Length: 113
Image 1 (cartoon, one colour):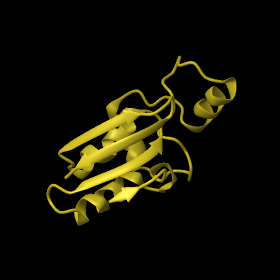
Image 2 (cartoon, helix red, strand yellow):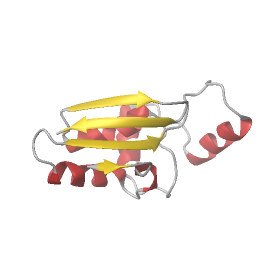
Image 3 (cartoon, helix red, strand yellow):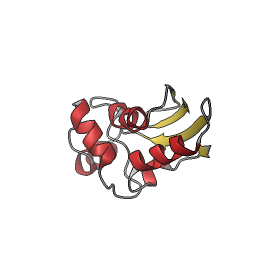
Image 4 (cartoon, rainbow, N blue to C red):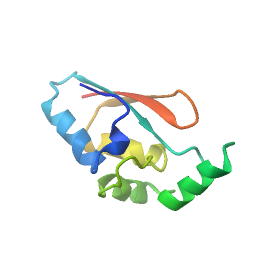
């Protein structure tokens, strides 16, 4: 299954990833790309920082990351961090997840059921 530049647009990413896991056969692969906010302190524009602070706030703990992953999201909102994004896949039971950051905010993920 492939979802290109889409997960950050899903209203409930954790539920979407769980549905992908449900329909994949064991050993099946889910490939996706999405947007994650750059880490705090990363080089970026003032606009990037303002958008990140206004849209997300602080999501440092794994518990908060899971809550964010399960919550209804505004369409197009980047994930707060890799912990929030990873929580979607861990909660859906994917066996392995490979993440490749292509630049500050755009990531490619491959997950195997």
